[in-house]
Every structure is written in C-alpha cells, then in structure tokens.
Image (cartoon, rainbow, N blue to C red; front, side, top):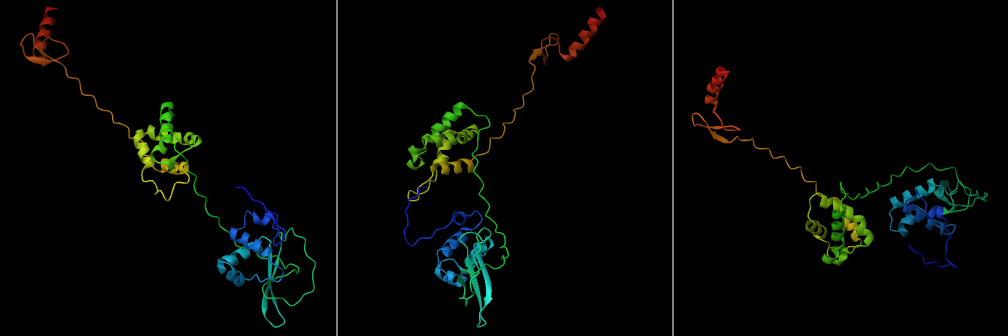
Length: 279
C-alpha cells in the first residue's frame, strides 16, 4: 500500500491510532468512534439518530456503541430532566477514559436528549459481552514428493513454465515455478503422466471475462485439492511349482518324472533290493 498524503488546513479531525488501529474493536465500532470524535458538542449520537444517517441498522450501531463504551471511548448515563423525561447523556473521549485526564466538573445545565457534553464521567460501565472472532481459514499446504528426484523436479518446472502456452492467464514468475515445482513432482511420483498433469491444471478454466488474478494461488489450490492417491501396491505373482522332466524307465520303458533318468518308482524298489543282496 502507498499513501498519497495531503495536509488538511480545514474541516479535519485528529484521531489517534489507538482507536483507528484498535486490535479488539470491530471495524464498525472503529468507524463509529471516528465519526463521533468528528462531531461538535451537542450533536445527537443516539441509536436512532445514527441509524437514520448510516446504512447500518440499529442492532449493529447499538453493538458498536457498547464496544466503544467498554473500551473507555464513551460514557453513557441516564438522567431525568426537570420535566420528568429520561434522557441519555453521552461523554466522548478522544483517548480511553482510563488514561485520559479527567475534565473538571462544570455547572449542570438542562440536558439535551442523547447529546455529547463535557461533563464529568459517570461510574465505569458494565463490560460488553465478549465477542467471538471468526475462525481463521486453514492454511493451504502444498504436497511434496516422498522421495525427491532431480529429473522429476525438472519435468515439473517445465510443465509449470509451459502452462502459459495453453492460456496466457497462467503466466507464472520464476519464483512461483520454484515454489510449485515440488507439488507437481508429488503428482509425477504417484504415476501421473506429465500430459495428464498439464490437462488437469488447464481444464475448465474460468471464462475470459472473469480472469485469473492470481495464477499461482489458483494452481496451488488445484495441485493441493485434486492430488490423486498413490497407486496401490502391485500384488506379487505366485511362482508356478517346478515340473520335473519326463524320462523313460531303463527297465520297463515306462515314462516317469524325475530330476534325472533311471528307474521308475515300481522298478526302483526291486533294483535297490538286488543291490542290497549283492552287497
């Protein structure tokens, strides 16, 4: 962001950064506090008066007033006039009342309904109910390869650098290519062909009229949310049992299977007995 400064010489209000950059006030409360500080004494700052002036409704304005009151920028008290009416007296502080110098009491005059005055502050108001801040969006974490490989990394960089040939809106800087290359490498590591990665990143792009303001963020979202799962492990092929070759028996000429030629099972037993008798 760059400021274009202008030194005001009339119709300006000095507002402290403790209000303009308050870390706990809502943006509505900060804007309303700045508006109230710009008003002269005696201006009406009631809920209905402010709602008639701005687009925010009475509920939002009432909530913002309670925030300013809780952090010491406003003090509102209910007083009864001589005619028996109840009015709200509002005291606005340029800095929170807990660090602001307290004004000296002034003679009390007939109050104007819901106006800014300079009287002494009333007792401390009750604290506003705690505000719940919206949950921060989860940070996008790009995928990375389990086993980095220089060849895959170069292929990934070539895929990213060449996307502008398919659509000029996907023009990436050298820094963006270096940052996104590990995510593309994770796709390649999971068996996705480079052409398939390219088709996924360039498919169903927004219309030309809508444009792609941040191509690196657009591609980061696709690389993260469309990452395919790893391929399942290939099951081991069971080995076929070994089949012994066929031989013809040297005695009966019958075929049998064995590692070496010789006698079949029926002829082998009598031959063994004959050898034993000879021994």
